[in-house]
Length: 308
Image (tube, rainbow, N blue to C red; front, side, top):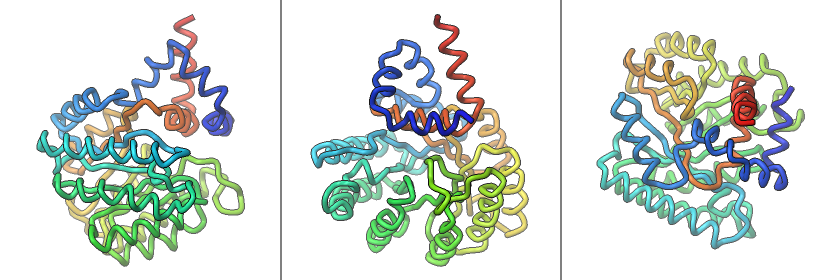
């Protein structure tokens, strides 16, 4: 019941100011966000890779309103690419980007976003790694796939994200799988209307399994993004059924979520990648994490109660 409340709160500037100003928020956010600056984030990356985990890094900054902000986000990712190269982490760390952080919603958004993300994809390739384009709400899907197609003409390793709660996603999976795309499959974390998305967990779960089968049967590289124990068990069975070796797919989970399960999967030989966000603009990301699982809400509320 609280999920929609937190999703609505993610768009409220008043609640944003209140949560950001609360002294307790920083301690709670640290569970899900690896610092506001690059240096502490890199320390987290070193710690995770030392334990056999790979990472994908997200510099938080979605929903910008000016070209200057888009360029600042571009520059932050360019600095990240240089750091990954200097650290020799190209084989263990990729980058995830939201095109809204690169100007997708501005006038001429597709062209603006492409112009800003292209040098990041180029820098990633020079660092020996790649970029995955995160998916946001359904209104951005066609734009995001258009930018993906343009980037893959030169950088075919560029990845995409699909969300099983959208009705369109099975068709998207077929197209992407046929093209050999790296695809992260997630359930979805935005409040979507009934006309475009499943509204009930059991429907989203069934769609997730259908999409996973399509990706595993295709020519691409499936990235299985889930914390759900049932979905993980089904995925382990399906990768075996479809003859996927350990280097032909990977699991992905969010930083701060189910750490012991991450280590278990890695220890059993699965490639396990942790989605590590960092940066000062953590509010929207944080509220969606609270919306996704009641356990996260309880963690946040217990932390608040413990500080009063």
